[in-house]
Image (cartoon, rainbow, N blue to C red; front, top):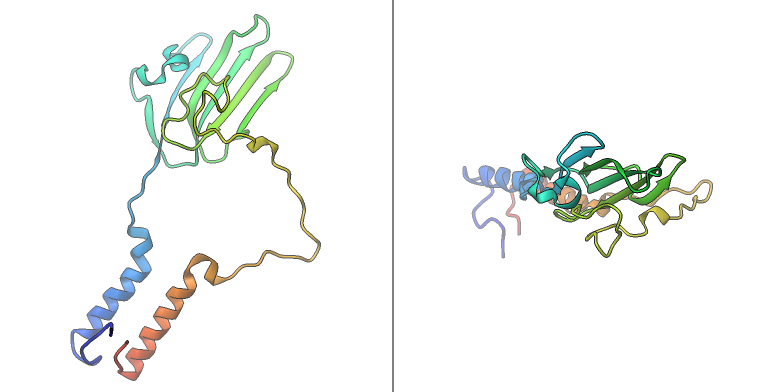
Length: 184
């Protein structure tokens, strides 16, 4: 079935071709964007709404934010002496968290880092892992990085991003316009 059923040199053919090319170029950007929704609140030893720790949905104000980043996060920092006393507790969203799922301890604090990538997944207390923290990227802090061979490079190409079809379509459309033929 031909794409255009009228001669290419008619007055209405150019707008149709421009519209077609415009949709091909802009089409991927016209899809609706759905951001990640995360709880966002903070507590320190001396301030903040303590419900942020156990019930983030009930925190007054804007406890749920639309996040345009990759991860919902929790950072829980506890004192070692006295044990288990929360020093700071943060819920939010980040593009590239320092740690995805880890617990670090020094002489003063134990700090829990939790990251997840589904809506409102940062609802836990920060101590629990995948059983109480849905969407957790379990094992993310245990990735092994292996260097490549000297002189090797990644294989890339325009086809890997779908650009090959776009370039081919543009080429065919321009050639048809130049030749004055019908695109089939």
